[in-house]
Length: 317
Length: 317
Ligand SMILES: [Zn+2]
Ligand SMILES: [Zn+2]
Image 1 (cartoon, protein in one colour):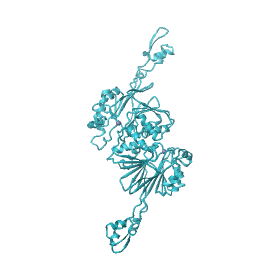
Image 2 (cartoon, each protein chain N blue to C red; image 1 turned 135 degrees about the horizontal axis):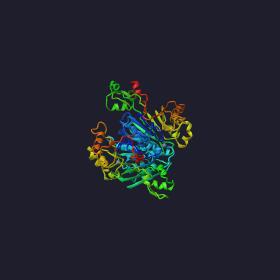
Image 3 (cartoon, rainbow over the protein chains, first blue to last red; image 1 turned 90 degrees about the vertical axis):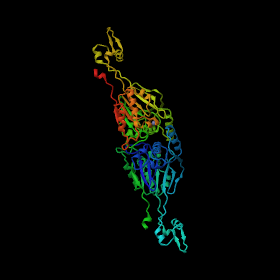
Image 4 (spheres, rainbow over the protein chains, first blue to last red; image 1 turned 90 degrees about the horizontal axis):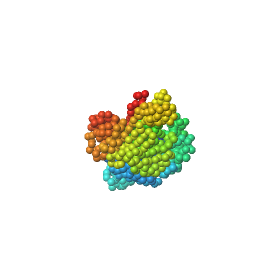
């Protein structure tokens, strides 16, 4: 799982930061999942290591323009690149209608199936390896945070040891791999857990934007490996944050602390914290680290490979 | 009048070229007029010498995505920059509905008046100094080319000479300035034309995209100082041009020649003519110059100051 920040500014692009989008590359598949898609996301993808043709799913937090105005251009370009297969889009109500209107008035005929799913709190998507769930956040319009959880992987089955014990290969191996116990024809009881390394816990990435501090974010981010949380404002501008239902750096850190995450990456910064202003992004970082030390500031094209949880199957072999 | 190309690629952005937009800075006012607004136009403006806050009018040729997907983001950003006044948008039917749908689903509330004008062939806009007119082109959807004409300026009135002739200042000066003849109280007949430098002809800029070769483009571009014309394809790919109702470099040159323009700048190039392809943009340029030598290829951020027509008031004074 590798995270690439494609846009880290709130509201409007600046020379150095585009509006919101985050790409998540899945190690085990040639797949990219996108979270939000502000204007110019396809341009950022062109300048990144991610390929537009590898996008399979797009998760939208809310329909404010700085999170969706790049969708139509990206979808049109995806249809012209390589051999488009299908894109699934997940998001709040209104997204489907927005995309339909854009397609209608721009005469865009997509050459591939586009499926738009209206999300509700809970599980949004699941396959053999991942579960994506969402919870409502607290913003001026309906907004959802997303949690992407890798499923736990079974520990490696020790084939060599099984062979050395004289266990006949075949269906018995399958049972032992699943951790079941098996009584052999000769009467020996073999425990699957003795032949399997401990399972490896899946990693969890959580994406929370746009929102003011809310308990749902803490619930969603519970023990995540990485929490990506918006920090539009400095703690000193908390009044603005409450008025506009955005977070301060302090709120982001409080969510990280409350949820017991490993790592916090803040993003979605107001362009006001630029050199020349009394407050700069380094101040937001200091404010957050005072509460949650393992905090970083995102920047455009920053990549972060989420470390695998201790792979005990390697340690014990 | 200074032209800045903000995007010169057709259909999709590339690393070096964005999708369509052209800025026109008016010398005599702190105003920028925009022609088309593909996704990422506001980003290109940030990197150019033009200011988003100076935009007053936006002219849209047609509603294909690569010409309008940057509109909403730009309009939202304009509302947040400086002190927004008003924007007038001109374009084909459907544009108003597109913008309304985008505003609705993205919850965008513009803080300034936005007026959308549906254009019809003929005069689209006129003030004391400029006339903008349009003609339908030949594309897959309704598309208009635009002609921006500076009005002719009266030649300078020679105040010194009038004083030397003993002409009393006042209303008589006004008549003479307008080129009228006046009989003074002492019986002398004074011809206004003797006291005024010849008028200076206004400049004409014409923007034709997207279109296959069409006579309307020739009519619209008549004796323009600069014709900006799309050249999506090489002459060797003319079959594609006819199928998709786009122009080849040769068609652009034929329009320039037929209209007797001074200067042709080609734009809206298919990304296929990149290094590595059998054909490159230099080939499109050669094809065009064989027909119309005074041709150039646009590139992103290229600027062109349209030369004033021979200023005879300076020459004769
Ligand atoms: Zn928002
Ligand atoms: Zn078009």
